[in-house]
Amino acid sequence: MFPTISSRRRQADRAPSDRPRLVQRLALRAVVAIAALAALAGCTQRAEPWHLTNVTGHLPDLDFTLTADDGRAVDGDSFKGRTALVYFGYTHCPDVCPETMGRLMQALGKLGPDARKVRILFITVDPARDTPQALHDYVGAFDSQHAEGLTGTDRQIESLAKRYRVAYQMEKRDPNGSYEVTHSSAVYVFDPQGRARLLATDHDTPDAIAQDLRRIIDDRS
Image (tube, rainbow, N blue to C red; front, side, top):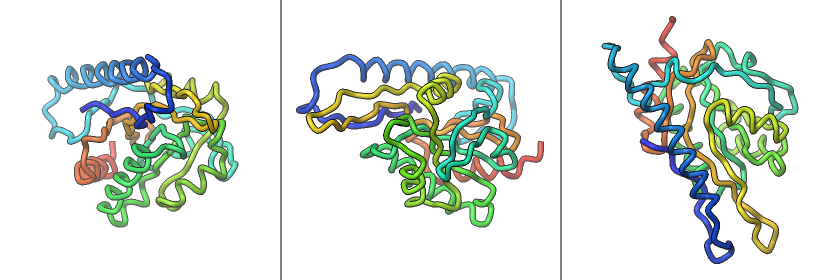
């Protein structure tokens, strides 16, 4: 139940480095801590268990100030009233990001008309390359109706990643100047009130995600 680390590395082009391992350890440590807290909370609750990891009460509410892929300034309150799926990734990601976005699209497809009550927030961990236009094109290729790309300054992204215990690290540039970003791949689910409720990993199926999203959507509390 741990998030994988993106992306696969081109070993021939890179010098040995401990940084990816460090980022992986940090990401695993953060999710283990969250899962442990959630497990303890679950011991005192008798409600129907969630398919995803229940993090209710263990992560802060949705709160940020960033730039949307259409150039608007947005904050956490901009998405109140909808269930928000927050994912930290980047548009040049070769594998995990498109796989995750595809899985989320499948989950939304299972919600039918209720999909309009969900918003996917793709927050870049590579603001140097991910301009609003680049993010707009990227998320639009998946679903421009339900997904929105968000970017900001390095400091804004770093602060937000720290708030939700997200680890990421830019890798060594190859001879062409290209690089990948190692990052944790969990999806954070916030209810319409902006409260952190669930954590989805790459082990969670579209069916499992859709079932829990429907419970969040139908919850009037």
